[in-house]
Amino acid sequence: MKSYQIITSICAGITLGCLLTAGPGFAESEWQKTHSGRAHINHRLKHQEHRIDSGEKHGKISSSEAAQLHAEDQSIHNQEMQDAAEHHGHLTGSERKELNHEENVESHQIHEDRHN
Image (cartoon, rainbow, N blue to C red):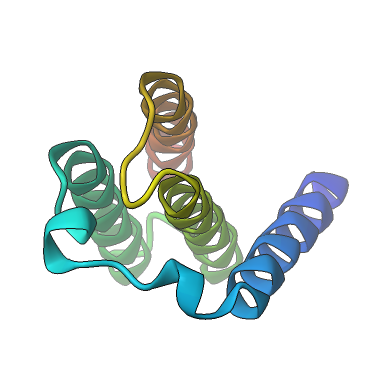
């Protein structure tokens, strides 16, 4: 499990670094940020963040589990932003499918952590 956490942290750092060095090419209009495909993914991420926080608050998720889950959420969000930037604020069908799959995996992990 530790190696998975390290790999996730490294991937999140690399993704964030790429986003920070990309510069003004990542500027988006409000419409692009709220495009239906992106809005759905970001809504799910916010909902999962709430589930993590709630689980931690009620003692069902440890602080280390919560930190890992938040890092996974951030990694998914970073990937969503990077994918959208490559297509002028849009996500392709395959990108939406991949991000949805990643959110499903994390949702299952949140459920497991809250019920272990």
